[in-house]
Image (spheres, rainbow, N blue to C red):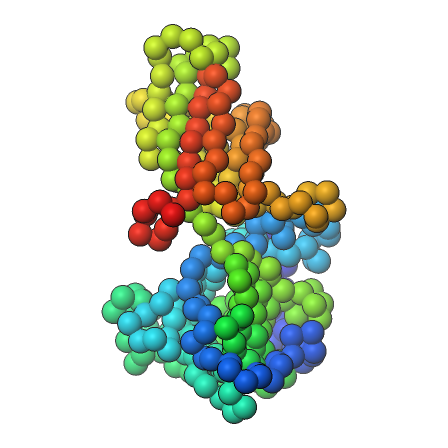
Amino acid sequence: MKSILVWTLFILLSSACTTMQHLAPRQAGAGAAVDAMPLAGDFDNHEQVVSVGGASTSLAPPHVVFTLQSTLKADWSIWHVRYDATPQLEATWAVRRSASGNQGVSLTVYRPLVDAPAPASTFDEKQWAPLDACAMHGSASARGIRVAADAAACAAIVPGIGASASLLPIAVEREGEWLHVRLYADQARGADAREDARKIETYAGWAAINGGGPKGGGSGDDWHMNRTVRLGSEGSRVALTWRDGKPSGYSLGLERMTYREGNVPVLKLSVIDDTNGAAISYAWANPQATRIGINLGWVQIGVERVAEDGEPR
């Protein structure tokens, strides 16, 4: 997927005046707060990508992972964008949040001035330059943030940014577990194109696999323990290994999905055969589940949701 992105960028550099009425900023009402919704966490649009199935390459959403990190300065965050293409594309931005008129909020994106900017823990704003023409304006409240940039004004400075401009956020909605982002490159996919990314919840636990595999059932003493299983809720996969560290040929997968025409959201834990990528078996739980597991006799798994500090929730 998608050498098309490079072609897309050239088109957008020369003409990128697509309107953004679908994400036009709304005026904030009373009680809007700039710091009401934190811009931090890992977000993945796995379900959006999977749900489109066989859509054409030019219209299908790309798989994108957003990592938003807080800094010691409350109004600054670091955004890392990973775009699954061929080759894979990545970009890192600094984002400054500030109050604007009518109790609104603005997010100004900054590009790095050095090859390796300091990490979020030692953030130095002197290493970043503002892209004022691409600043996003809108509203903030206890429910979330909704901002968008002037696409035509932003287009005027894009040629000076370089290839990373394709991953420049030009509209953002943050509400609940969702982060909706319209990247500069999305304009080529239509007026409503954006990435619908959900916050990744981490599950940690264990898995035991019998040395005889499926044919071994649950008998005997030849059990191989995987004691540090760690899975993200948005399409994460981890290989099960034998006690010597070699692959067993089976993996675990964890994902949030919606079935029955979008009416039944679930958390799905799968045992996967690595030879063909097919799920041998799976268990469903509600998306808010703090624990989920499978017992097939020859393989047994148990994981529970953990907080960012690694402690169970």
